[in-house]
Image (cartoon, rainbow, N blue to C red; front, side, top):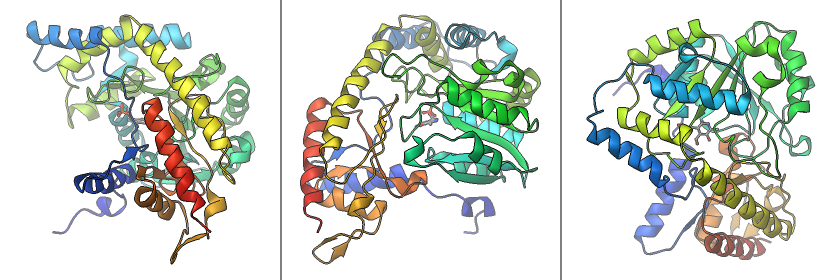
Length: 398
Ligand SMILES: Cc1ncc(COP(=O)(O)O)c(C=O)c1O
């Protein structure tokens, strides 16, 4: 069947391909340790589940306003006030079916053919494809490990052209876990002040998972003059172990939010009513489970970094948050196992699946082929076993 040209510009999610291969091996009785997952390994906290159930009991099961129930918009505004120190009202908030949907609404509402979107690499796999779906052009700017995988002001300045419409910032980052501190954000803000047509989306979906006592900071907090040009994307998926509930939100300038809400009204209508009520509890209720989860990720990260440091030839930028590490395995590229030569991250991921029975995501999917992404949203035992198997497998490469 002839498909739209749009589909030719996107590729299926790399993570899903890895999962398919892992499932095939599992069906054949092989135990796979899955470092490929992009979601916390904890259950949704009980108080949040109860709020969802309560909304069903109360019959809150019908369409809601397209942009979300007022109670959730208020909870979003209160969260942004508490965590960002910024004052927004209901008219600045659009509730969508996950952070991904919030980003899609933003791109579709903002971008036209020919518009350029700056995507620092390594990037979250979906950004370039989503920009392509909106008929705009992703402009990928490689950022090196030696620069901590953080986009610097010179690289940003160089990337901006008269066609640049949007910059995507993701902190802490998927896949690197790196985070933009105040100093880095101020340097970027200085550049952005010189280019008033450039807007910014700050994808803050991992902002609650920060290590080393880091305080949350985002671009909108460091430069007041940029505020009207910044969109915040966030959601409950990662912070509250609610990936399946599908609630994310977009916060920004009110006429834009109105337009994005109109767009959503013709695509999905409102996000699920039950999930919205559960999300009110997530944002406004007890924050202890979320804080505890972040602490667990921090201690797992420390252990993972210790293990990686002991792997010959492997380097890794220390994450500041989220639940991923993005070690550089390129010292093993060009090496052989029997007849097989490892030519890059896709080959290495395949080799690790077969020889170590671990699933990882090749760095190529994130725009950095030297690296491999490991998610440590796994039990301590699986982390130990999985990395031990990786170590033994790479020792076989000569
Ligand atoms: C950087 C980043 N942004 C957005 C999302 C989307 O999250 P959601 O599950 O809320 O759609 C993800 C999910 O993996 C992500 O890693």
